[in-house]
Image (cartoon, rainbow, N blue to C red; front, side, top):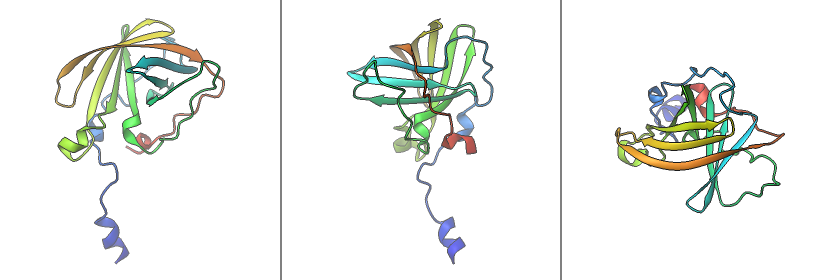
Length: 161
């Protein structure tokens, strides 16, 4: 009876993990700094990105960030749309994440892509977003690096896929 009940339970975060084609393909060659966070002002909030040596990416939007603060802690390790993976081709960083609004259209989270130019080892400018429907949108989000000693690790829900 217990097995039957568990098999009928709906997934809290159904997702199309097959769309993460960059997973496990990143090779670090000192293209940019990775021992801290990247911060941007996006529509009045603060966008925070972490990039990890294993090719894992984390993004969250917070209301404020004081320059004297330590690293932003990661509390959303089991929520897939905060996480993704990335590769670098030339000076272009390509990130795949789950579109948090795609579940409403597809009944599961689908992958979107964001492309950024690596301006230098501490500045990244996102210029393009590709939606799950393959629609291309222009972006102009400039993230600047900030070193922090207590960078969290990359443990997250996508590791099981």
